[in-house]
Image (tube, rainbow, N blue to C red; front, side):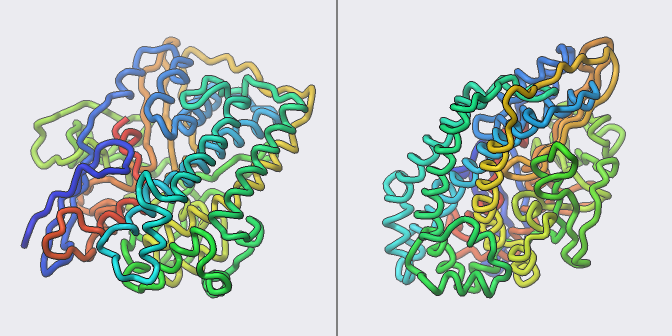
Length: 486
């Protein structure tokens, strides 16, 4: 057996290291290390509850809105306030704008540049991948950066600034949208839609891609114009069965539900999809436990629900290898992200692809790109639904004592905040981020986390210090390590 340590990873938010045990050119076992400790959960203790809205967006510079929304929802749960419809529509739009920017960034800047590597020289699609996706220089990379910059200007109007907006409150959004502003916002959304339809989907309307109901339909769409559009180039690479099968996950998928509706429910439903049973089950948040057995954190009292969570560093703890706890749902490993959202939402294309391949590099990226097609029309609908002269935010007085839970769906998956308040101050604040789920270490029973399982069997060629297959698998989860070690 050979041991290979891969890291630090480039094109990943935060610090990440993966230790691989190799036998006969394949990964036999993997240990995922989040090597940075930050301590936001301790920083928040003793603060006035509203201070969470200032601190938690600064956990991350690329998904700060997700943290803001979860904190605002936790405080709303604490106060019992109901958000007015306008506030809900704007909050959804703000979160969706950030999520789609992350999806765009992942595809063009983080994931696809690996296909321009020399390891793929000789593949029919390689020269085109080099021209389009070479880091910093690819023609589509430059276009995507420009589109992303223009897209984020929406948040100047809706949220004041990005990142670390202060426009979101437990009772809604503090920024009302004037009719003339809505017209300009919709024009900017149409501009982003145009980029996606022209460059990513090669001339296909978003609704046409969303309407693809099976993998057979997807490949027919690809075959119609195989050289047109950036996503078709990705599909051309996935015609290689070895690439399409990379990185099978645990087979259980968690979504808290994305984009709540004012009338109840979500635009994308909540649920836990079990691939073996092919069944959607309800999310039981009471069954969440964080296991710190292999984290450099105290595991006193054993696995804990986040509402009673303990974050106490033990840097010299025997058997530990990461700062990340191991979240489990009913004792089981789950995967979260766009693939989980679209399975819970019942999208037929993702259901068919996962039934054929499982949760792999191919199906994770497919689900993320599908969300670009599905969510832009939702943003247009939310902006159209705004009612002039109606409230955007309700006052939310907070009790001196109580508990609150805030759940939402960040780009990378299920994000939860749990707050306990005593005497008007935060007594405990615990966060379980999407990458906490996906990049978790082993638990007390020795069960590896989602990425640790997905890496098993990955090929590593002799002399590879940064194996390309390992890079694909890691990036398919789109890790955000700074949120993981909040």
